[in-house]
Length: 324
Image (tube, rainbow, N blue to C red; front, side, top):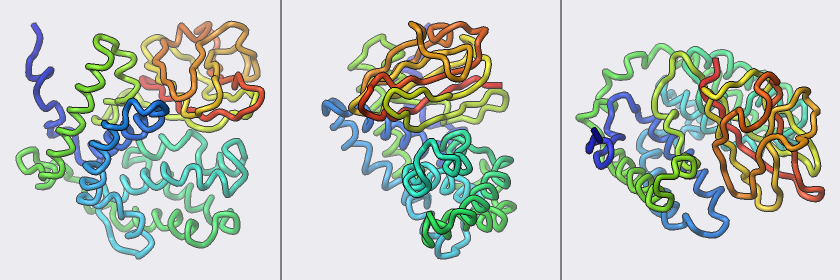
């Protein structure tokens, strides 16, 4: 039996979807629409949800949270965690540019597993992550500059100050489903409209629709993890994404965020294997959701990206869920 409330109701009205997750989910979708909007097909959706995300982000303190860190204002536990993830995502390219590029050893000190490690961090991870960033920022302060170094270093103290202040998330009024703000409700309806609009553009095509929405961001996952990898592959180059056994129980989302180059994603036997007919090709500004078995022999463990252009660099985002 088809559940009408799931099809036509507001499935974002859920006590388990806390404000930070709703905001991150919406921002992630906005980034996906923007990356795929080379032909202008998603301009209306982008224009509709952008102000709703900004308004809601401002209300929950995420948009200006980085400024609060610089000014030394005390934030709640959850505000620090969300702000930290947002900053590390927004400053990804800035840090890469300052320290020698996405493939440099210094960049990997900040992002050994991509910015998704920060945007999807759990509270138990925060002491390690904020300390890592503080140490790396201090070590490379000359390249980063005083302002960025201060911002990145400040999260360690903010976390230490706030870590005991907000452990009862579901007991707070602003997270109670009966007390949802007008900005939250407006964003929920805006994202519902976006979901149904995409469903109308790709009726029955689950993979195409999933290119724009990562519903895993809305809920906690105690057993399985999702990792996000992003970066740049130079012309003709091969980049290792992860060295780990995958099965078809893992979900893989691949996004080509570039406008000028194709890439091949595949599973190889070594970290330097050529595609040799394995895997799938992802065109500029396109995304795919392949099964791991479509990428190569699952007895191999090296997930790789090959830039198929001899001239242009290519940028990518890869998300893998269901990791143990």
